Structures are given as C-alpha cells and as structure tokens.
Length: 486
Image (cartoon, rainbow, N blue to C red; front, side, top):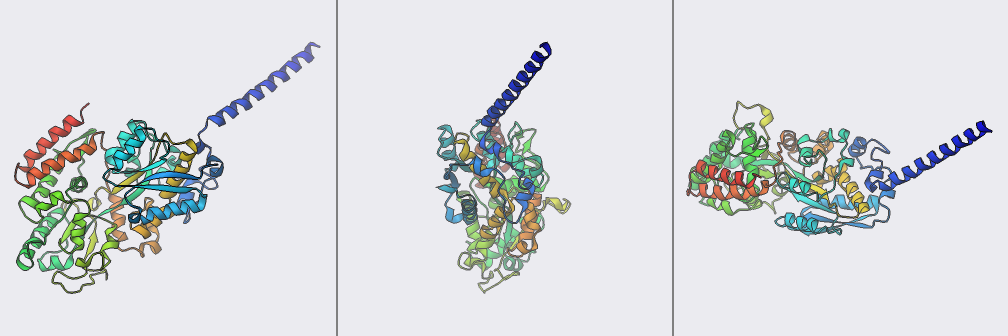
C-alpha cells in the first residue's frame, strides 16, 4: 500500500505541476503584446520578406490585429505632395483590409501637434511622422511617449539597412523606436550652359563650387541682370543641413564627445564659406535669410540660380517638367535646351568633397532629409500592432520602390539600387546611390532643434555685416552650450 500511495502521490503532483505550467503559459501568453504574438520570421525570415519584390506579411498578423478596422496617422503636410506614401497606405489597405486614415499636418507645426497628442495621451492617434528626427527623436524617447519597435528590427534586419539611419531611431537604452517615413537624398544641381558661359567647369570640390558661384554671378551681372545669382540655399531650419554637408565633406562632426560643438576647424571653415556667399562674394542674395526650404529650389527651377548646393532628390521630377521648371528648359541665353540627358539645362551631382586631397568617400558625405515613423505608446495595443505592420511595409523593398518611382524619394533598403530595371526608370539614381552610401547622420542631444534658431540668428548678423563671422559663431556656441547644459 505504501508503494501504491507514493505512486499515486507522484502522479497527483506531476498532474498539478503540468496544470500549473499550462496555467502559467496561458498567463504568459495573455501578458504578451499583440505585436509579440506575430511570427516575424515566418512564413520566411524577415530579411527575405522585406527584400522580396512584393512585401510578404508575417505569420499571425490576422489574430494580432483582429477587430481593428482603421488606424489614424499624422502625416507631414498634404498628401498630394506624398504620392509615394499614399501608394503604400493603399497597398497596406489592400493587403490587410485595415484602413489608414491620415491627418494632414503642416510641417511647421507637426512636432508641436505630435507632442500635444502624446502629452495628452490621446489614444485616437496611432502613429506619426517625425520630421528631422536627428534633432527631435531623443525628446520623444526620453519622455517615454513612443512605443518600442524592436520586433521589426532584429539584428539580421538591421544589417541590411544603412547603420546611420538605424542609429537615429535608437534610444540611449539601445531599443529602436521608429522606422522610415520618407528619405530624400540631398543633391547638388547646376546649369551647364551658365557655368560654361562664365568660363568654369563642373565643380568637384567645395573650393571649385565657391569659385564657380562667384564667376556665375559676375557673368550674370554683366550679361543678364541683378536678379540672377550664382548660388542659392535656404534661410530656414534646413540651413543646418547645408552646414553639416560642409563639415562632413571635411571628415568633421558637429557632435563632439556627446556635445554640440560649432567651433571645430571644419565648422568654422564651412560657416565662413556661407557667410561669404552673401557678404563677400555676393554670389547669393541677402534675401536668402528669409527664404524657406522650397524657395531656393524654386529659384533654380525658374532659372534664377546657377546652382544649388543641397537640393532634394525629388527635384529630378520637378526640373524635368517644362511646366513646373520653365527656367531650366532654356539655356542661359534663352534658347531651348534639352541638356545632356534630354531633361533640360540642368544636371544633378553628389555634394562634392571639400578638397582634392580628400578620399572619394567624402563625395556625397551630407545628411539625408529623413523623416521617421513612430507609434503612440498610448494607442490601443492592437492598433499599435497594425502600425508596426504598416511601418514594416514602408521599410520593405516594395515600399521603397513605390517611394522612388512614384515620388522620387530615396528607398530605405539600399538593395533597391542594385536592380538595373529600376535604376533606368529614374534619372540620376547613380548619384542618389552615392549620396545614400556616403550619407552622414548624427543624433543630436535634447535641445538640438533649438540650436537651429540660434545659428540662424547669428548667421543673419554675420551675413549682413553686423558681426564678424567667427565672433558671431562664438556667440552662437555660448548660447548653445547654455541651452544644452543640464
């Protein structure tokens, strides 16, 4: 009997243990978030699903998103300007049956609107576009307002994307909090007929670019009128990207030992170059100080600028159109000109390296115009799972091809450039590839976006002769240091 009792006791204890294990597993399953229930490496490994010509949804997505009919997204600006984004939203709706409602928010107030929704813990907004995440992403992460997206970023997936772009979306804790919204490479555009008339060749260094801008302006003053300029650039917050391009072309950085430093030799040389465009060489108009990111690119389209140093790659579509860019479909003498590619009197180049001595890896060493896609931590969990699927589709090969062919944006997945059939459909994709390969992106500490206001203020003082260039820069550094010191 004793032996039988021990045997029965053992059976009872094993049964209880199994029961508890099953209950424990149910609790663990219940504790999992919906996006953690998705099998991201099935039916094929995530890298293969993302790299396929047509995006493949991961296994288990239906159960994880069951009951969700729609999500709401904050879009940067009007959707008529984002046909690639719209195409990807429509593709997502076709694949999942879940509608993406988008709210068109002006880029000027997008960050404020986003912060307002997050501070109020508004559950109705599922996802947002964050413009210029290099300057603002760390704010959102440190405030614990946006959801981690590690499930779509395993180590294997990170390896097939540009490391600089992935780094921007990482928090100090090593977790990843976003994915791509849109990416635009910055290219240099110039007018061959104008430079030829001015007696200069296509610039291959920053020194040659400065000289070409000066001579193009001098020629225009004598042969055209005072409204034609050798160089144009922006006077708004995007001006920092122009300064970054000059610093990176020299192999420098703005973040030094974790802090913003605009007094490095590389930054000083770049700063003086831009001040001199207006104050000394007179190759750029003083009116630039009030120009937006779009104004200077339109000046080129209207034929009023010989070159722009940092223009969006989407301009390729605009400048190829005689209706949208009438000024570059005639040469500088006013005669019809189809240019070297049959697209008009313009060419696109990667931003040049600083000097001939620099290695070629510094050609195109400029920041990309990148926006990130983030998820509201306070949205319902199943809606957040839907947003993660949408984010993954947007970073896929098919999502990138849509952005490239429909809107002219740069694909996030670099392998898109390896397809010759795609490359031949869009002009200057070879230039875009170089820009993407050599792009430099730095993550700015909290307060970084305010730095742009300070730099613009002192740049205006230097360019108008109210302060010497380097004295203005030193004053700017003093204010930036106070702002970012905690």
